[in-house]
Length: 62
Image (cartoon, rainbow, N blue to C red; front, side, top):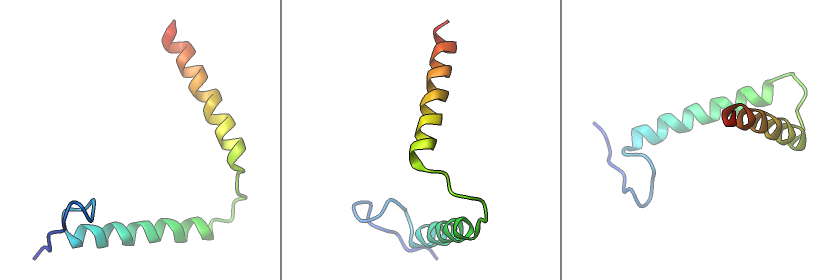
């Protein structure tokens, strides 16, 4: 049986959907914390994304 949620209170339609998302999200966090690879600084990621977007815009323009 599903428990409907108020759309003003939750983005999920049912409590079961909310619980499922919470389990998935917590698993993603756990995996990230256990990942042995070094972290990448935010500024480095943003610079790489800006470059990628600029390249795609140039190719799309002609």
